[in-house]
Image 1 (cartoon, rainbow, N blue to C red):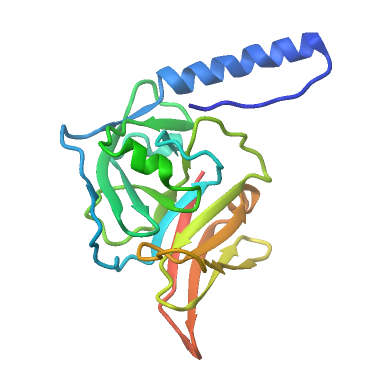
Image 2 (cartoon, helix red, strand yellow; image 1 turned 135 degrees about the horizontal axis):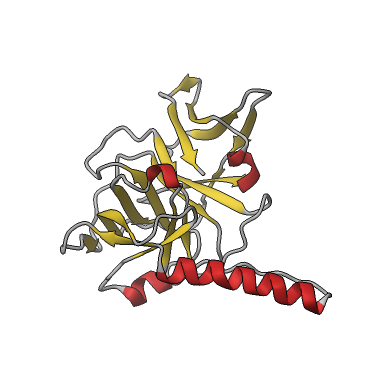
Length: 239
């Protein structure tokens, strides 16, 4: 669901804005949905899991909520394409990979994901940095991911320039940086290693502002292992 929180002292203006945002809320809740492309829902919960070879494991809007209500921001230019959503826990015990399609009237904004998991209580137990969502246009079998979509976990969101977005990275014991590129200048962000808990799924968090992503035309994930640079990972975020 897509909710916008506002504070306004003028009753008349508050009422007008509240009505406007209520319309947006209803549109998101009832018209904008990602539905499974098949009747089969693929998820695994197991204690013994192999280490994933994927470097970029997730990108999502930060929320302190831990509900299994997932949403994906789908720009209109991608709404006719298939969409893959991968979900992976930091400890590696839970993972899912499913193909989706847009249902209902196309609109820019957050699309609620049809996610019929059998492990609701398990997903609720994962904190905000213990579960990574990765959505992208294309098939789940695609190896090369050029474009990513922002995901969200929770019931309530305020989306503005200061909203935090996190990249979840499996570093392979390397130092990780994100280089953001635009026409005027670039910005480099150093990522933080997770020190606590089991880190089979991913071990590094890269924290960005939403405004950083709206002003760039591309990004590069850089990894340095000692004096050696590992192959860069180029991507863009569809907003």
